[in-house]
Amino acid sequence: RAKLISQTRGTLSKLAVSGGLPLPLGGLRLEVWQDRWVGALRSGLVYRRVGFNGSPYGEAKPIPFVSVRYVHRLDRASFFLQTTDRAFIFGAESDEDADRWVDAIATLAMCERRPLQALAQKREMLAEDRRRDRAAARRKRPGRQAA
Image (tube, rainbow, N blue to C red):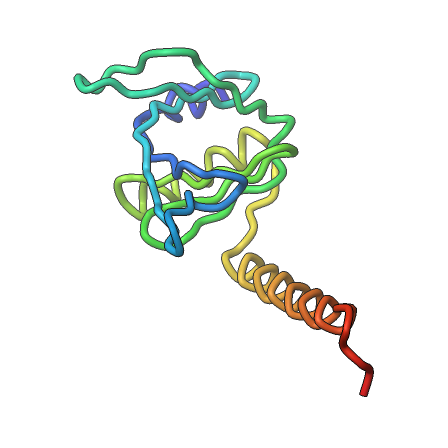
């Protein structure tokens, strides 16, 4: 465990989000990736800003292992980390590096590694829920008569 903790550190890109979604810009979604130094401690991960010289600076923000619910790989050398109160998307330098981070976090946090298929199924369920909600809202609009 101590060796894994000492090896789990480096610079990742973190997707900046607003309300859990990429930042809105008019009708478009703007994805902003921020470089962050991320490291493992016994109690969890911490991340900090990265300066122009590549050195970490600023307040270390914790992600306690006890709050990690699951972690899974996405495409393009990135991975998704779900905690009890927040979701993160991190980007690594390569697919192999992203796999290493996912394995390390899952091992240290003793959490579930969810396959990408589970995320696709969840998206489909959410899309279906939104369709039902929109249909129900249309039926409830004043002035509409039931057929």
